[in-house]
Image (tube, rainbow, N blue to C red):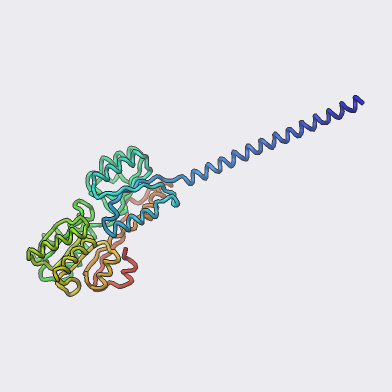
Length: 340
């Protein structure tokens, strides 16, 4: 009997060892699987890591162009598209530079910049480069060493001005008496659009600037400028406004004074940006010309960032495709396609 009991106990002991080994093996397999899953999750997390972007822009209430530009950027640079974006706005260069310094301190991966002024950016962009922050310009150029930024996606403001002035010259007026309403002084848009007109006036004896003032992109200020000229009794036959909102303000002053404007009327009205409502004014022949300034740069910037993340060198300068519209030839399709 003792031998039988001893044999049974020995069998149970062997079985327990075997079972224990199996359980231990199972635990090791589970641990191994967990490590594998953990690495896989870590890989997924790496792929989903958000790119930190700081975006400095002009005030979105500045104009219809700027509203469309900001909306385009907001739509692109969001978490769903892999970005952690912060936005700052100002029409003042010194404030924008302070925003840039803060974003660099916050260790953004990319700094996207639409500068209020072309000058004064070298120092802060050098700080960005030293900190490993990649800078991409959009909308506007700056006077800085190209090595301080990765790429620029901009409008050719000089060409915009030249296209508009060439169109005006083609109207064949015996004399040009121009009220020139400028944007924010020092901005690339102002410099390009003003430069072409200034050059033409200097070259042609029958071109005269009746009044030249900045309205800082603002309709009310533009209205006041034109009203002041009307009140002075000075004769004029062209309104050259450097954005649509200022052209709108100028027209309000003309309307209040009973001065006709548009195709075949007393005053030629010119604007820039191609807001949909402005192109509709051309279609109605209340305005004469509108120069396009393309606000949709976000997809270009996104493509550049993807190239940089992949270790590729992007194209240094991308010029937006733009045109000018004449009230004599514009169509409803143009309004629908190009109006912002």
